[in-house]
Image 1 (cartoon, rainbow, N blue to C red):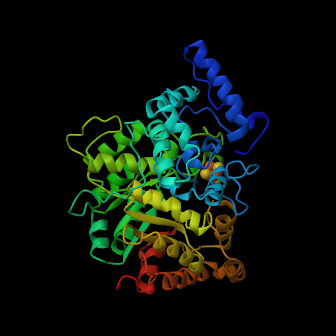
Image 2: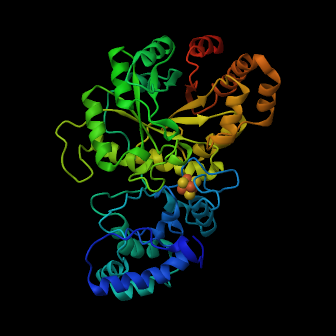
Length: 480
Ligand code: SF4
């Protein structure tokens, strides 16, 4: 990540087993010897240093290639490995200093694993020759930034944006007219929407989830089913969506990047389309570090949430798989993403969110909000970027059932922060903590519901489904 970082941090992350010409191997070694210490290069073979302020993002333990996850600690460290700074925070900071923030908006592709571990200098040289060696050398001294970036893009864009991806920095309006789901229909009609989430059962018996769906269904428009939250196995999201469909309840199919590959993602979405699932929410997912032991692979997601959105939007709107094959009957869905407004500073977070919107996010469900004032700062930044009319935002609210839960959320859940006064109120409430938590939720809803850009509430009850009806009724949001 920084200049000269000895030892394992700049070692190549991968050594694929394949035969390469001696010259290519030698070039690869030289490239690593130079780019390793200077840029923290991990030899991913799919270089995108240009777009990331010359810091290699492959140092991120999750392998995020499009911006940070929601897990940066308040000290700006990585929550997976707290001994190191979040590499994406460093990229954002350096981009800001270098005036290259615009470049952070380009939707970058997942790894082509066949290229991993191989050199990229040879490819760059071939591209420079195509552009013209003198044109390229002259561009190094150009003061006109636009001309300079045109020349550089002719060399580097073809490398970082292969034909099977073609990512860009533009907003793409959904290519369909009629709303894909009831949730989308209500949002389009300007209704204040309430969604909630139900945690899938640990066993194969659906009785628990049926009971919980029936409890919340009269009060909400849609129900999310978390995808192995906290990296802990439970009934799959698709099975829960089937149960919800059978009960005539609108489901939001949550897919975590952590447990899916590009192949699995596309197959799951075709399958869920066949089942009539009309809302999909793409999340990165908690790292196995926060899950039970033994932990699964803590490194590398195959596709990050931005890439998931890009792939799914193109499947729906352009009718193509990632490999370019045509889909005869493309699935129809309303596409959403999670966001953590307070993960980093609001300005940087807004860049990440803009990228998700450009990639295909039509609605956001936010992480838990306990500080409405900080929410304003984030909304302001989205507004500055002209995003508030491009995405529907459902603010995440949780009624706290006990002081223990409040502490757990504050201390253990990445991206969730409870202000001191809420923690104190919960602690002092003693046996009345659940009522206090309920009142806090009412106050939060009251202060959030009329904010510009907020279109609804996403209730995360953490197993306290019985409270949904009372909360919705007493907060008055149903009438809105
Ligand atoms: S906090 Fe998230 S984005 Fe940042 S380095 Fe860690 S895993 Fe990567």
